[in-house]
Image (cartoon, rainbow, N blue to C red; front, side, top):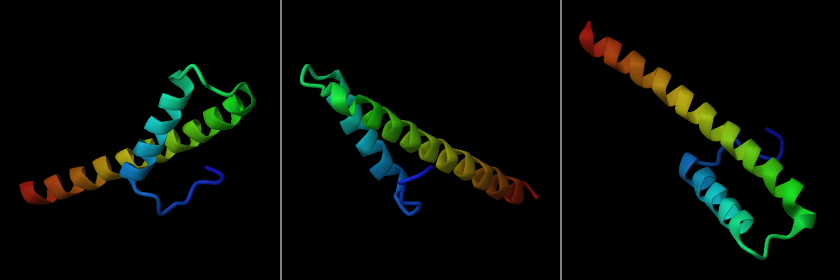
Length: 68
């Protein structure tokens, strides 16, 4: 995940993804930055997936501990 601050929160990453998507959907989408925006969106998606997976694993551990 190059160029992604590892300390960015899930909410911040999601908000940036929404801004990118909105820009891509607009009629004013700049073709010259399309690849750059798509690459950034891909990196943000990977970060969000990673955070969701890590959170899911941690929640499973906590729930398992509660059951014991």
